[in-house]
Amino acid sequence: MSEDRPPRLYKILIMILPVGVVIGTIVFMWMYFAKHQEESNEQNIIVATGIRISDLQDMVGKFTDLIGPRTTETEEGRTGLRQAAAMIEGRLGPQNLGLIVRKDHGEAAHDLLFKGLWVDVRGKEKPDEIVFMAVSYAGAGEVADANTTSTVMMLASSLAKENPSRTIRFVFLPFDRNPAEQNRWLTERCLSSEETCAAIIGLKTMQQAPQIGTEAWSTVDTEAKATLWWDSLKEGKPVDAETPSVWMTHPVYASQAWQDRREERLKATIRVTQEMRGWLLTAAE
Image 1 (cartoon, rainbow, N blue to C red):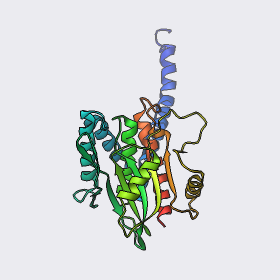
Image 2: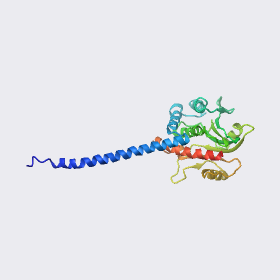
Image 3: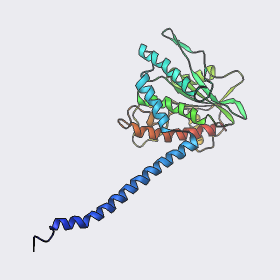
Image 4: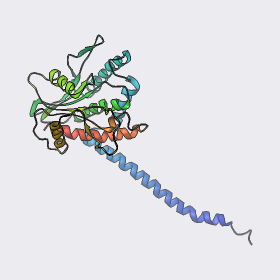
């Protein structure tokens, strides 16, 4: 009789198997819909802002893997600066994004001339009032500085079809200097005699590792009145100020952060870019 009975293990497996199938199906369905929702959210961001993580990833990869260091201190770095300028001009120019790339008269270093480049999203009502969005395209060739420059390129791309009241001017500077010097470069070299500077928003890499518990965004060498203007800008209602200027940074632009988490850094950068996009549109009202 005992030989005719199926082993107890078989009975247990027969009872457990349907439960396992049900649980496996539930887990699969949850993963499927979670992935679908993530892709849907990303698509909504693309439709609303034109910001794509694939574009950011491509630009960061080119700066880090193809171009490398971008500095006047070495021959490799000087070559990198020229290649970076060519990449910015090609990516944002008439053949791709359709914007006109302009250049200032530049500054000599090691018998070479390095120039600032800019593109405009022209204002409809006050086109001669310029809101600057500035960044340096110099860098050590790391993900952090590549991410910084790529963010401003992506901002220019995402705002190219907008119709702000003031002109938004995206400027790529050849040297990474302190905010005061960068501001002088912008106002002395990147404005025509008929134009006025309405505001300057600058983006920099984070030089030190971010402190735990500190605010994500932080300002760099910025006066108190400019910080107040920036605080109001973040709330969507900038107060009047005489040529406000704020240079800022974020942990996604820190070399010491996000180590070995490149994908997470890129996703966080998309969220940061969305914030800056809103600030620029508010400043250009």
